[in-house]
Image (cartoon, rainbow, N blue to C red; front, side, top):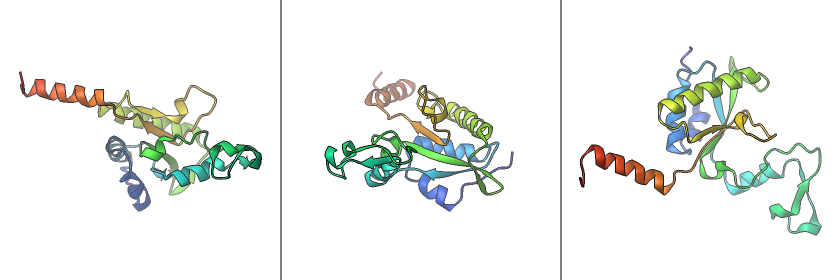
Length: 173
């Protein structure tokens, strides 16, 4: 394994992501079977809306242009995203591209599968296996090989961690 490192643009995107994602990616890049970079991280609502509009056309009969409900599948039909509730909005999703000698490699699906396996193993080693998901494993027709996300931490998760910590340190025992 080559011991890859993130470049400046990937590092800048990484800094805006959920700390668990940061931990997974910082651990994984150095031992990855293939080089990759982060192409998308946290997005603003406007950035998400601009992506969401791709492959759709505005129908003035349905409402204002700034309203997602006023858009319908149209144009060439190449819809980029299916949701305005993306985990990118909260910094809990990111997209990568595989690299081949520094050039973007969009087509080698086996390479994306091997990177996903590596990221899953890294997430598991850090205790995030139940939280981490790859867009290539989605159960519906829409597969998104560059996409990964981590579920939101729930109050019950934090409570369980505090209870375990208290138990281990005999606090309030």
